[in-house]
Each structure stands twice: as structure tokens, then as C-alpha cells.
Length: 272
Figure 1 (cartoon, rainbow, N blue to C red):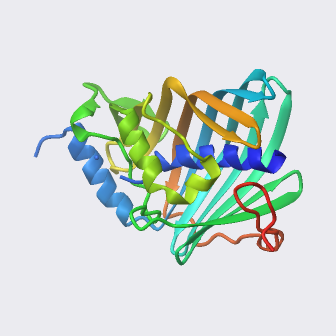
Figure 2 (tube, one colour; figure 1 turned 135 degrees about the horizontal axis):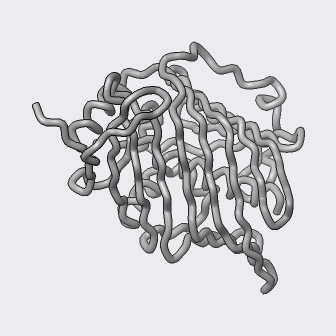
Figure 3 (cartoon, rainbow, N blue to C red; figure 1 turned 180 degrees about the horizontal axis):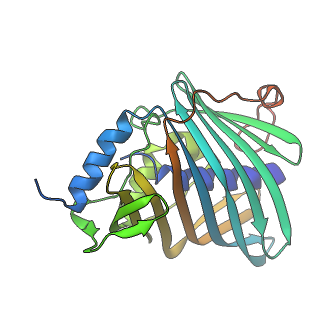
């Protein structure tokens, strides 16, 4: 059950990341997003800092508890070959638990292979990559472009002056994102997002056109998934990504101990 819960958490984290990757003369919110997407299509690598917060209820054998979970750390991605590395620290408030996580996601042909290290133990899983899920870009999926709003004033960030764009992604649009991400379905199980919505804020540097930061806050009636008699209900999920640099990494090496890990299925069973 420990392994299954770990993969559920990783699947949720990767799904939150997927909202930030996938598919927005007068300056408008839509034109800024479209121009940014065009730049990102040619990006070879990037680095970012991520901060994720989650409120959830975990229930087993009729006993439930509310848990606030947070994960923070750095992520780096190279596009060819496509490898993402996340170095995160996970904190669970109620249990007073803090744990370091090291995760690699590699696209090998038609397979998405995930390696996760926790407490000195590595696990490995693989799922097919959907044809309509383009993992080789980091362009922003902002829902209906007509719902985007450009703030009247720019904001000054550490990296310079930035446009501020806001928008709301409906539950139906979130469900479409999940439906296209077949490689995560076995991890997350049956999840209905139609009662949720995501409020998005995107900062784009005025001088370069690259994203500076993005915040997505999902809220609503909750997301529930069940595995091995344990029901996890997520009531709020927030992901903040601060972009550090683009085209700054040449390659990412997956550690030998990760490559040698036993492969497990979505239920935490070792595959012979």
C-alpha cells in the first residue's frame, strides 16, 4: 500500500505539471501566449523551481483523516532525448513526515518510464505514451483563450518587467487534459475532474517573451481515487512554477541505481 500511495502522489504531481505543459500589432493575452508558445516550441531545455500544495482526506476501513501535503524543489528538462528530473522534498503536516524524493521521467520510444527514489529505495514503472499527448514541449495549456485576461499594468519581478495574464480552466477542460495523458491513468485510476476548476495566473517577461512564473490553483467538490481499500480525496491543489532558465542544460543522466530498479505495476506489484 505504501508503494501504491507513493505512485498516487507522484501521479498527481505529474498531472499538476502537465497542466503547465501541453497547449495561448496589438498586445493581447492571447497574442502573448501564442508568441510565448512559439518560442517554447524551439526550446531545447529548461530549469524551474516548483512548489506544490495539496489538501486531501485519506480514508481506510471507515477511518478518515485530513492531511495537508506540500512538495517543493527543482525540476530540469531536456527535450532530445526527453528526460525530466525532479528533486523534491515532501512534507505531510499531520504525520510530521518529511521525505526527499528524486524522480526521473524518460520518454523511450512509445513508453514513458518513471524512476522514483524515496528513502534510499528506487522504483520504476512504465506506461505507453498517448499519440495526442506531446511531451516534447512545455507550452502552456490555458483552456479557452477567450477567457484570458491581460492586466492593465505589468509587474516587476526579479528577472525584469512582466505581463500578467489570468484565466480559468473549467473542469471539462481539465478532464480533457487527463484523458489525453494515458500514461498517468493507471497511476491515478478513475478520476473525475468535472466538478473542479483551475484558476491560472501567468507572468511573461516583456523583453524576452519567455514565461517567468505560473500559478495554478484547482478547487471545487474534490477529486477522489481509490486503491487497496484506501480512498484519497483531494479538495485543493496548487502548483507554482518559477522558471529559472532556458537552454541552460545539455543533458541529464539517470543514476545507475535507478536504471537497475525493479519495475512495478500501478498496484505496486513487481513485474517479473
